[in-house]
Image 1 (tube, rainbow, N blue to C red):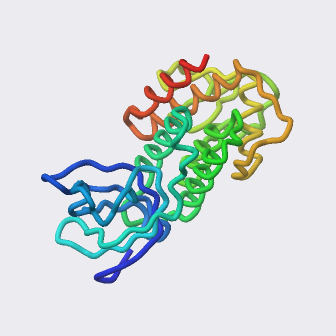
Image 2: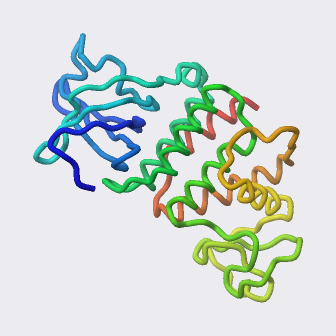
Length: 257
């Protein structure tokens, strides 16, 4: 996307890393430009004009200018620091995982408004604390759909036959579930799904991106574990790498049990 010499946008801070003695390279996901990487000069100095605005999981209004290799951050104002989210280690782990997904699947200088809005809305829900058991799977499925990798759970991905109630094989290579007739080849990218797990996945997809807490809906723990497992494996398959934040997320969640 073309941009002027200086430009402004709304952005979510995904991560940063130090450079030199006082600067940081910051990765942002923006509403108008997609993912961008920029240098915040002097950010690590005491009394920096940026303060704590460029911390991960902050929503900010930011002003930048074009540089030779990386753009430069000129000004930054926090819109929402999601203070309540950051007061709870479990919600921090979830937020960091979502940020890594956005960083992995978002494209440089290619806006995806639905993906940005999904991330912002999910951060607000995490901050409010009204978190359902399917918040993260819903985010994962929406992200896959908005990035062109929507998995198929309603019909066989090979022959397009409607699936009867039952357990089926999910094949990551094909991007969906296979019926008994098409499920003929064992593959390392295939995972078994129970009928309960299939119901949850179909239910989430039928919500059409509504990530608000489902009132009065209870999900079997075993089926939820299957859902988490198959979506993690599919995301890893599509990304072609491990998602590092899952280890931290799993460690925090295991401590809660």
